[in-house]
Length: 154
Image (cartoon, rainbow, N blue to C red; front, side, top):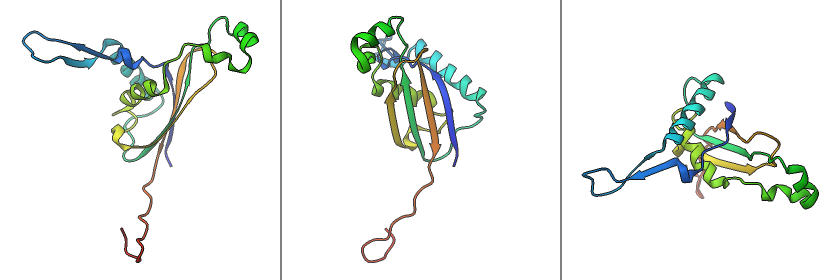
């Protein structure tokens, strides 16, 4: 079973990932990747290449990721004040917001297309330093088709 683990920079917010504008002569707005999004995708590509990934996994994959927000300078003060829930007040993008950006950045680099993603597991971790996203991509073998009620293969 092929498994790839990458530590990526903290993702761009999906709110800043796309840029919509109205070009001259067009009747409808056009949406493209922002410069920030292009830079993030490029950095993910270089990190994947540095990790030895030369071509995308083919077929079904499972993606698990953990989002680590930046730890604020006053984290100890927050921890004394709020106890175990101190990190609830730390600024962090939503997991689903990070997911779309992550899938787009990995597409064509680590896996062929996000249509092959069959399982996603996401977690927001307690900030422990620099903000980052740790992702594990695992190739999934297709399961055997189960027999129907009368023994025929479905």
